[in-house]
Amino acid sequence: MAVGHGITEQFARVLITKKLLPEEEFNDGFLLAEASFMGVEGLLTSDKHLTSINENALRLAFEEKDLSPVTIHRPRVLMALIKGVER
Image (cartoon, rainbow, N blue to C red):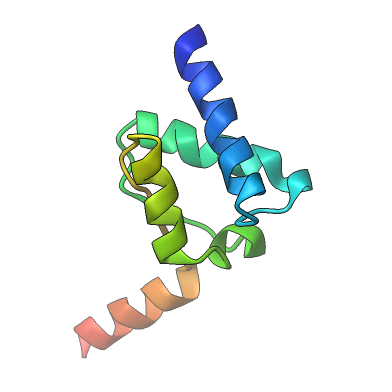
């Protein structure tokens, strides 16, 4: 899927240009774009570069490229929510 590959690269570059990711984390941007293409709505990760991205800025970047947004979830936060529901 060459077209998809080009778009994922462009999206990763956008995230770096907007300073949402450092340049050395290009693959994280690539991963987010691929997740969007696959219809993944949420990504569970403890990767500090991904978890520190401003949610609103990330959503806007997805919208600007006509990609479905992927929400980043932290395992600790998710576990706290689960424990709160179990009580």
